Length: 93
Image (spheres, rainbow, N blue to C red):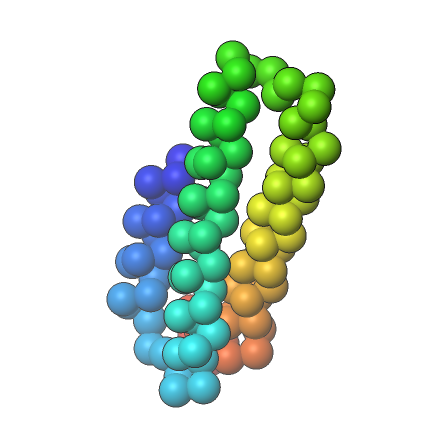
């Protein structure tokens, strides 16, 4: 699944005409995607290290880290929406 997301993002970024005002937003959106990927991979390994169950003493920290990762994901989605709805990236106007 993640390979499809990365591949489709790369194809989209390289195949659409990008307004100058959208370049910074696209750059941040892409960077944010890599940060989210890294955060979720780390959380996956954290949970996997403990054989699928986060120890009770670590659960609040794990939950906070997961909430931060989801917040970063939402921010990345907002940037993606801004690219489409504000700058018209990928929309044939």
